[in-house]
Length: 364
Image (cartoon, rainbow, N blue to C red; front, side):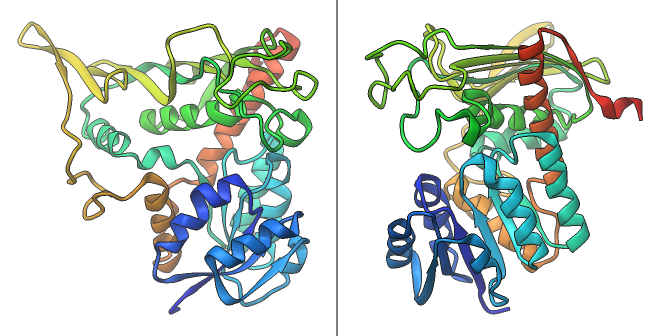
């Protein structure tokens, strides 16, 4: 096809900050439909990014009725991801769904099953994989540089950066707080580096220690304690079938100076890696310890060749449409994203019950 005709469902912050600007840079993509429950947002999206004859909707079902739309981007609150994605796939559209995939594993699995049933492409918006440091480290790992990775920390820690807009603080709409919002990026990145999705058990803790404070210091101004119904921090201890361990740390508000987001620490039999001062790889050679910092100021990394200056979200969009055009698997597989959702749900469940959660699929 000459052009991919695209519909945007949810024309809020993530659509304006990530999806639509990235799509606008792809010459073979045109945005022809915009849907939001606030019609003014959809109109603004059309005015800035749409074709002259683009249409505006307040009901996503009307958009999906159109047979001339090839791809849909789901950029809504988390609770709607599964319902809208399944409906879009069933209507014959390929789908890019913003992270997290869903608010629970059942819904995530429904999305995976719908993609298989319809034969349409589905991917989830984990753009951190496309950073130059991530791509370099992935290639280094695939060539055996770290050996067997048996311990990792997935880090998404903010000191005081609680998002106060939209529905971020609403548990019913989002399914959780920092764990499902930014912890999901850190966990996806870690599991992708390890290429390990066979988790065995999870222990989790969530806290609401700072969320009820009035006039709290915050990057985006004080939050309203009455609206803050999600956790302010969450932590998980994850064991895998092969014996590997991952510790997941996430917070929007935590009394710490160690602030890291969408990064991880990896420890393998041959070397380790972290992102504490840029990407650092450490190990031992000739009975001496070493620390190596690759120069990532130029191209040359697999999947990044020829795209110097391209932002991660732009690479994400480009590669998804390449997968559609050439009938290839998406860079972020829905099956991988579903496991991320499954582990996050297990952390919440463990925190609520005070008990470990075991992977029910391992006994099958």
